[in-house]
Length: 242
Image (cartoon, rainbow, N blue to C red):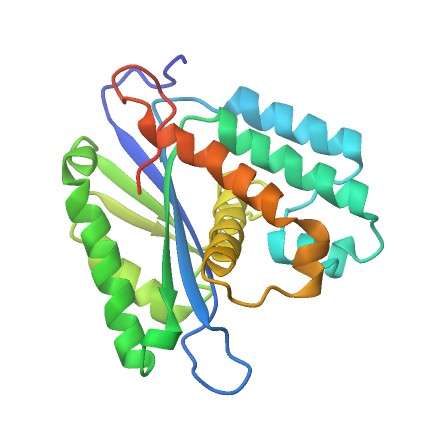
């Protein structure tokens, strides 16, 4: 994998998306999840993005991939058959498997959380724990650029407070969701990891999800991603930590 920068500056891009909400009222989700996709900008993924875009063009869909709508057959996907929707999923799933990124998803089960204040504290603590566990990794970078659109202001404030302690930190709120395919990867991971958590903990799965994924398919998909965590950073550029 060739590097794309020659000035010695090491930059880390972090793409973040969430699933669930901070509310505890009727109809609120049981699970709250946040996915982080870490991309060392020294490693170009231009070819992989071009390949993904070409594959999507061949399928007949070039817009932003929103995983919940794709699986539940809503919005842009309401008139698509299961084959086309699965082809779109496979395109971004295999894109993720090819690119040199790290990623992690934090899942909070609100069943064990009393209120929004406790939930905020748990999310904050889990993010800090993730950073502390991998502090040597983050120390390598001269600047960190966080891409989160503040879809939830509460989460945005938590992220700002934690990541602002890094040198040369920048929070990008306004960006093109269609172009930033890594943001769409983060969106996909929130859905996959939430689904996997539900499956493992016997939480009811809605019919639309059952129709799109079988239990065996989700186990295989997650296992293929999970295998990356065994790769050494020194030996390969495909990383994953949990």
